[in-house]
Image (cartoon, rainbow, N blue to C red; front, side, top):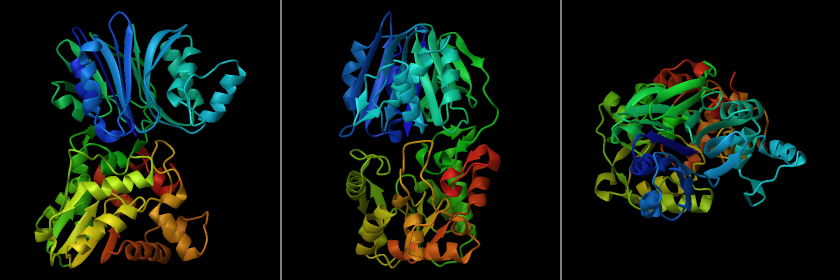
Length: 464
């Protein structure tokens, strides 16, 4: 994932850019960057793999004055890029995953283009997008060329001498929201970035829409499409609780998923808990609906550790998960615990760390409840899981079948015996007393959009 923030102001915007970008720290753990414009472009890029965004960039506030700027926090590519092209000078940040990146890069190389940012044999996708935009007749025309040529998704912000161009990917899988306050307009991935900065939420950018933002306002220069397939996982896990997408509160959705899980349970338990932090909202919903008390048997040491889902290697993910969660033995010992989790992706941390800590602390029973169906397919629209072998459900299927299979339709269908056996295998592998997943139609109902308006690829392997 990546988080984007941009601001245009009648006065210096650097502090607003700094804090607005920082409010996206939950979406990335590897690299961050800022670019400002005040007569000329300035930009700074830092690794944040071993520290927080604020500590890396605070020293640059005095060095980067400007009335407009863009920022990014990312799990992958180094950005922003500063580009001088026939369409004008611009800085660019992007979010998403371009699955045909190599093919597009090869065509540009054959046409005589060159790439300056090549890391580990990989061309930087933000530089690729900048090259395509530079071939357009204008900034807006170049962005449309990107949408026409790429497969996957790409949401972007471009800082120009005439304001910021904000473009949401063609199916709207990742959000962009516009905000305003006196003398300033801003755009962000997360609407929660606006609250403490004094911005009023204006509206969400539409799929494929291109918006030109200046200190005087935000004007749509390309309407895009009303067809949308928003990432469901934003509400379930990756999004910040205080945010809203398409006007739908993340925290409210998580409480509804928890309530839906409780509605199908009749088990006897002592407490309800969430795996911190993203499981907390689901657990609160479960507790309210079930009448069981919400407790915190596990607490997260927030100051030093970010999300264990985001780092690129399993070793680092496991280390973060092991160090950040601290069990409270007095709450755990002898208890029958309903443990709510946003999802079960790989399952390794649940098995080796979370559940083990509860067992070692004397938990009597652990009833695991996941707020979305079993993940079956790696995401093709954002950087997250990249192989089938990483997914707990696929490991279960391979163990049950004796080999990998291509057609997993029976396992996807929650009414089949194969699905039941898969869930039982995952339950036994993780080592919990019971395991239940929220079904796809229940998750969609909790979000509150039509199924056609949501991306559910990682559960179904298609979006039709």
